[in-house]
Length: 127
Image (cartoon, rainbow, N blue to C red; front, side, top):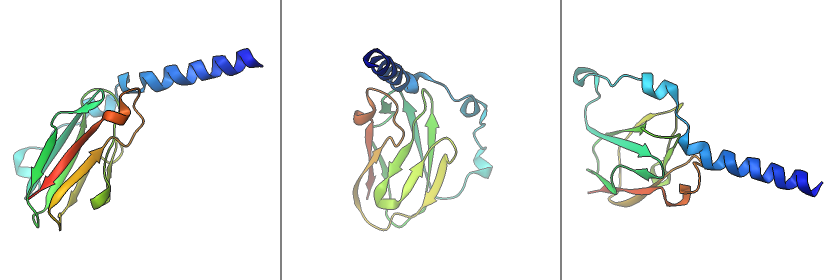
């Protein structure tokens, strides 16, 4: 019984560690819209790789619409901005909202992606 439990924990650990290493094939097939089809306003692309976003902070203006898109370049990740009720993942990669308050708002990976998941953070700065 003890050996079975250790084996199951080992398998669970391997799955958790390799979760960020898997690649979503649909993400690779998604085409970027041309400039003429992009919505008006501010655009933010969160490029996610293993355990980090491509920028430490993203700046937008208060009161202007923002279209935010998650781009999983490496691994499978999510992005959550709790203050604006935004939660992006592979099934919902884009959201548009209008920030109604200025400040710094944390963006966290919302999908358990492995050993570096807890450190996968960035900031949305609304001026």
